[in-house]
Structure formats: C-alpha cells, structure tokens
Length: 336
Image (cartoon, rainbow, N blue to C red; front, top):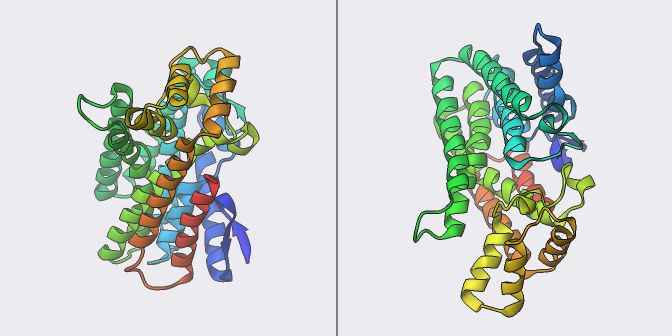
C-alpha cells in the first residue's frame, strides 16, 4: 500500500499505483512545459505556483477516472494539464480579489509582483490551457468552455450576493457548485471521456466530481477557520478578514435569525467590524473555532461527501472505484 496524491490517498493495487504515479509525473512535466515562455519573467511568474507544489487533486481525479477506460490513451495527460492550468489561473485571480499574501506556503504572485502581473499571469495560463485543449477536439473545448462559464458565473454570484428573498446558504452552495464543483466535475469527465469509457460511466463520474468538488471547498471553508497556516498553506481567516461569507459564517447568521442568542449577535457584530485589525481578527477566529456553526459546516461537508460516494454506486467494483470512495473520506477528514 502506497500513499499517492493529496491527503494521503492509499492505493493498494500496484498496477493502479504505477499508472497514477506515472500519470501525475507526466502532468507535472506538462505543466512546466505549458508554462514556459520566451520571456524569462513570464516563465518565472507562470511557474510560481506550479513549483510551489499543491495537492494536484484534479489531475489525480483525471487519472483515476481514466481507469474505467484506457488509462494510456493519448488525451488523458493533456486533459489533466488543461484542468490544472485552469485551476492555477483562477488562483492567481482569486489572490488578487482576496488581497491574499500567501498561497501554497509561498508569497502570492500579487504580493510578490503586484496585482497587474498576477492578473495577466492568470490570463497567460488560461491561454496556454486553451492551446492544449484545442488538440483534444471540439467536444473537449465545449465542455471546458461550459465549465469555465459556470466557474466565472459562480464568482460573479459570490461577489453580487444572494438576491432578495434567496436563502443565503442555498445561494452559497450554488456559488460553490459553479466555482469549484464545475472544474472538479470536468476533471472526472475528461479522465473518463479521454480514456474511451462508456457514456454512462462518464456521466456517473461527472456527477461524483461535482459533489466531491463542493465537499472539497466546504472542507476548505472549515480549514480557513479551524487550521493553522502550516496546515492549509495560506493565511488562516483570509476569507474572514475580507468579509467573504463562507459557510461557517452563514450558518452563524442563520442561527442568529432562528434563535437570536445574545452571544451569537455579538459575534456577528464582531464579524461585521473591521477585521483588518489583527486583534479583532484573532478574536473572531477564536470564537468561531469553538462555535456550533463550525460543526454545522463540518456536517454539511460530510453530507456532500456522502452524496459523492453514493453517486459511484453504479460503477463496477475495482481498485480505482475504491480510491474514489476513499477520497470522499479524506476530504471529510480534512474538515476534522
């Protein structure tokens, strides 16, 4: 049994382990090649987050999904590179929007070179992803375009906030399905599709990816409050400081609406204050870490992970399926 990929995923089958490791190594080479430019500064900026590492969660899903067809098919690795390049590009843009200082344990691109370079580097990565995608055929281009539209729509919806009368939690879960679920779903879909898997298998894995992606982001929401920076690779409470209402905060506000407890009202008032002040930020983090709203967010994470696991039921029993099931457990484990 060997540990591969993110979160300590254990692969018990030697052939599957070899396929996954070889695939991820090829993806890493593909990422470095795709981020090269004739301009050395662009190469440095574009490879900044590639070389910082990361979980490579989406490429891992491509490799596991490809096991339901021919994992050596020529489109598998390039499709994983496309998905990861797209993800990396969004991180450059996210860090500008969040004014983040740290990403993957290193200085964020915007902190190191400024917002303009960070935004343009993200654009460069999108362009390189599109270049690779063009070789995978018009259907792949359409799938990626639809996912990218959903991703951007999710970001816009998050920025705009819920419409009048819309439940904030439902709105937020819709945001996550677009921002995160869409691209994780594409990772699973590309892996199965490029390997030539049956269409019903492609559909099952796409549904699995969407639910797993939401669970993954909900676990990140919990970690943003509950973890130390050494665990998450970025500054804890970044979303909190920027006033971005992640699920633990939304569950707190929901509780205030329902129960109106004085201590909950006081915590909401603290969250609505200027959290760029380090003392107030630290107090808000401390109080949220011990609040029932954080536990509710953990339960929400578990629910989506269970839905992802249930989506896999129609697939034949095999080591790849067992690994996909284990990923559901590991995503939940991240959230405590």
